[in-house]
Length: 218
Image 1 (cartoon, one colour):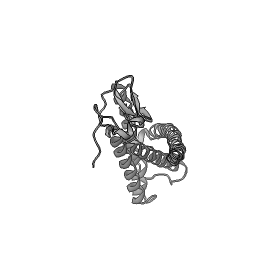
Image 2 (spheres, rainbow, N blue to C red):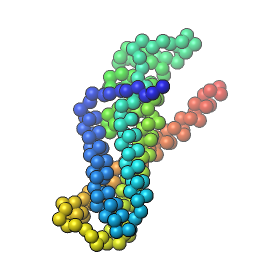
Image 3 (cartoon, rainbow, N blue to C red):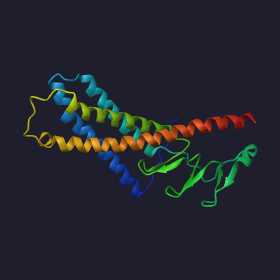
Image 4 (tube, rainbow, N blue to C red):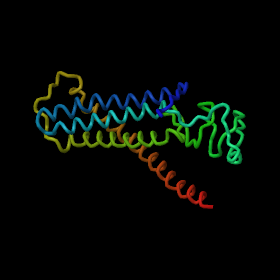
């Protein structure tokens, strides 16, 4: 069964997603233009590096879009509760609907979400039972792309041979240092933030799983 579409009308979320898409677009356009293609033309790197960078960029934006529109586990208005599971359900005091325990009501989305972790403004969506794996994918690919970008920024100045055929008539090459500094700054901020988030998410999974296994064994 395919993923259900879930669209949240939230201007703040749209603004945060717009910032993320701008950072992705900035690096996807300028890094190949300033670093990858010029060094490839002079034989400093292979075409594999360009292909890998574009693949990382593609996986990153696809995982962002999928996690932002995927249903996080929204509960239906009139859920059918089996008699044997009624003790595991409770009444939400905000929307007056029955929900499984460990579900939470999201004030941004306006409904309850199964096993809700948090509402993430950067994807304009909740992170819950049905899209948690997509959110982890996004964190992983974002770390990969940010690390790749930072390595290229570093190698451009400290490892690769100087470019000989640079056309200084182009705006990009005239402001090369400023563009790469902006790229490096954004890469460090995103890598630091997303790495901490990814670590806490993994620790949460690894600590909850043994508890769930122990509860089933009782």
